[in-house]
Image 1 (cartoon, rainbow, N blue to C red):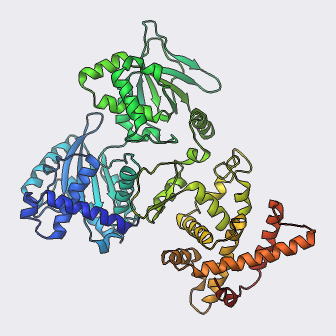
Image 2 (cartoon, helix red, strand yellow):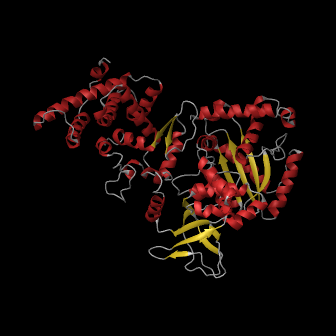
Image 3 (cartoon, helix red, strand yellow):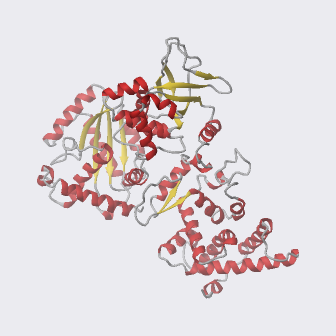
Length: 598
């Protein structure tokens, strides 16, 4: 989804908010221009999207002389502690939405936030004055504050050093920029993946490192109901009540599942069935459900028979995300009487392992999910490089699928391509290693196997800090053009491995009289040709390569006395290598390519 396309989506939603609130006093009194109305509507949209609440009118302090402090409100975290949020919004029209938020804009906001924290007298509207008085009381009570700069433009970190200095000078203060790219990513998560994005209006605790007091259930007075495994790593089986699971999810939200190969769906028939069992038959739940599996960094060396609370450091649910989320929902929506019934009758098994390092943790995740159709790529879905590539893809019309079936619905004109497909195309085109593509198959796919697990593994070769989505997208488009050019698929990936060499030389020779010829980006040129549906050059180049490949195969067959078609991969690898060296060491006949008749 291009940024401009997302802007159009959000712009329509802002227009709808204005229509729905046409009688609002701020719109009638202060915001008579369309631009000002949309700026005001953006605040409402922001609160509705992240808070899922309509009680925003008392929070918005917009008006004359408001020093741009658009929203001031307080919320309680899961510990019952009050946190004040102050949000300053920067609405932009469509022409400016794709521009970068300047450092000066952030500095201006920081200066105004600094003035607020110092409780200096401001000439602001009456509503904001009252809210700032409440904030002053909160600050004097050593309360926590979070400032948010909301921008319908792109922020690339130009003022990060200034932000760090601001936070350092104000303890118990947070600052976050929520720009249009963040809004787009969160919008995609909620509307197209059915998962809840990280909420900037909630304090997020790191489930992997935070201390936890785990309440376990003892069913008899003499303790018991615990199984302990000591070698090679400490492990326990506990019984939990729904209240404990509800508390864990409420504290950490979807951060509980960062190392899980799947996120729970917000809505699914499977979740509904788990919820139904919990509500209708809580006493039967333990019998019907396999329970959950978790990994923790540290747990006690010993647990007393009398202990009902176990201190842990960090927790990740690596199997049973759907169970946790369904129990949370059932408990969240239950009445007090029903909650008491659930906590009296319902039990859930927890298998808890102490972390044994990255490799051990990954294997535990792999094998505890082995009863479900989980592939090697699923275990890398939360890798930093996979997350980055997907985020980069959201600026295009081709979305990168890092986890199977993660997109439930799609906006118009968006194509979803799995990282499995991208990996093969990238390996052949950008890395010019088509042989590895042909060696892979459904039973022996090493693209998502680490070299740490198998010396033939290609994961680190394909996915690293140099891997960028634009290069993958180019490989994908070139492959699609090969299909349209009706290239013989038996050799398609070999052709893919050669076309970048040919086209790079072609563009350099074609534009040799231009300055900065060394800066020609072949990938960008090819993507541009695809977008313009101008594919003749690529079609001609493919046919040119096919002709060269056929010539080289014939010569190789004659030299090695081979009759019939070459099908052995080793022979094809030799032919490919010979042809590649010839292309690298010679000029490309531009006129010959351009004269090919399609």
